[in-house]
Image 1: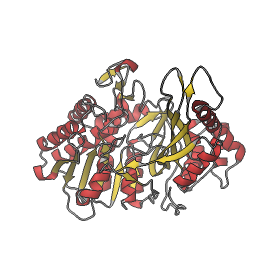
Image 2 (image 1 turned 120 degrees about the vertical axis):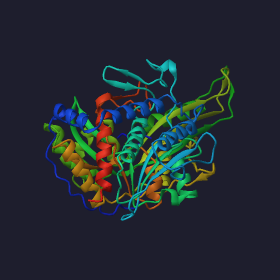
Image 3 (image 1 turned 90 degrees about the vertical axis):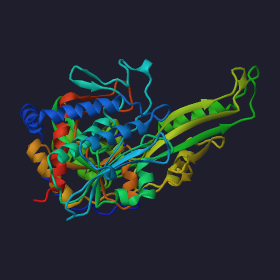
Image 4 (image 1 turned 90 degrees about the horizontal axis):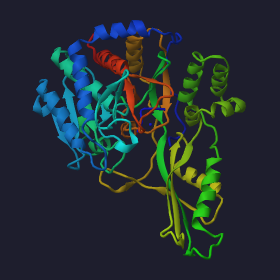
Length: 489
């Protein structure tokens, strides 16, 4: 996934977007001191220790162990006073277990589910400045694989649950925490498995997913806080060219690698049609209000239906805006040939697509086939694997109508913590486990709770990091938001 900028039918009207825009103002000096004072030092230290522990447990799919992280978090919850029966470590694979904890409330309202994933993408030591599985603090940042995506979020959730328990807080509803496996890849996705095998453990009125909903800042100035109500659909396609091959001393133009290379070049130069929906229109319109000059004008122009083509062309030069305007497909893996002295018999590429809600996977496949424009290049949808390891269809993911109580709690927490920072509705370009909860009928809202610097997205990349103060501010925000969502008053 990604909690950055990671096939519904025509989207229903997204209701209840009653969000007041004040315009972004730089209150970093004020809010920093307010946040530090709001969180007792012991809980900031606890959050730091949990974060460090998680980063230093390798949870990659290849050689890592998510179960080790799940058990470590379960121990912290039990040590904080959670009953054994309320902390469950379970999963379909010995290396891919999940931890689920229940914080009992008065039962006046249905539970809230909070989710985060414990697994991380691969990281090679030789690619990094520091060891990716050592937690390093340097120059105002925490470095390590998963600092951004998303062990910081896991630490925020766990710290909040422990703090509320220590304070004797009694919410008006049960709070459920699920930290899970295989969001980034693998055959044992934890959220999907829990919903299929143990729905009663995680059933809730709605879900808060810290792996989505970007809180954006630029040059230290907080711009906006997002609440993700929709996300694009992840799909992989294989482009393949087959050939009888032959001896490399007698080359011919009919070459599998050349056929594939031509198809990929044409894909590089192709843009899918522009699409808008209620959430992206809301995002562009509200972002326009805090953007300067020409950028503001372009954002307003693409918020219209239909969007202005000239503005679309200009904004499409920015990768993030481009992802919000259309389905995107990009070549991500390549293989071909079987010997250095033989004409290739095969050439294959993986093309990763992030499909705009409303576009169907088969429609995208046909478009790729048309763009390839070569009868000797086939295009097939790569099946996704379910929790049982068997292929499952790529399905539509409905958006989540913005619930008034969630909007109200977010507005309250923002106004108390970052006065003047606007709340906006967004669609994530990346995929997340919110897909599974939405399909299961649980409205899901991505809320990152931490600010990230625009232009410094290192999730999945080299020297992944998050700001130290941004993390501690997130500790405070997550705690306040959880109380706002579950307060009996």
